[in-house]
Amino acid sequence: MNIVVDTNIFISALINEGITRSVILTSGFNFLFPEFEFEEIFNHKLEILDKSGLNEEEFNVLLLGLLRKVKIIRTEKVVGYHSKAKKIIGHIDKDDVMFIATALAFGCGIWSDDKHFKMQKKVGVYTTKEMWRSV
Image 1: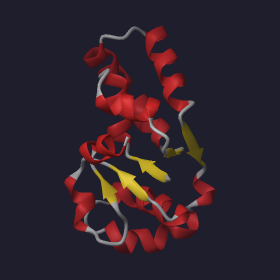
Image 2: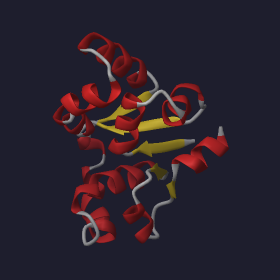
Image 3: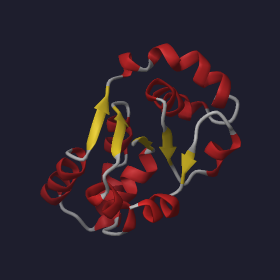
Image 4: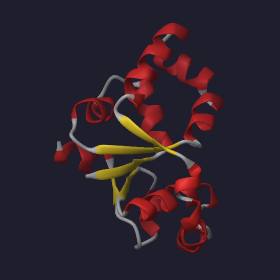
């Protein structure tokens, strides 16, 4: 099953060796990682290093390990769904339009603990607890 991974979920996997990281590394899901998430991760890199206690090399090794478990989705593959996604979630949180667009493009849900995703009804949203139960 395909599922789009929210940036906060991926960052959580980088910070904590816990359920989130375990789901990414051991489940059979096909995780979709929109390429724009790289920018967000690197914008928060210092915060991730601080909270995780990882050094630069450990961060890079972990990041590469997690990235091996996701399929990176290029923006051009989902841009055709942008206007529909904007109608669905743009009024709730414009920063999440591309997550919805990716989910629409691949006919799948989103893994996120952000409650505002659940304010829309067009795309399924799964919390970490729900994902853990599915493993």
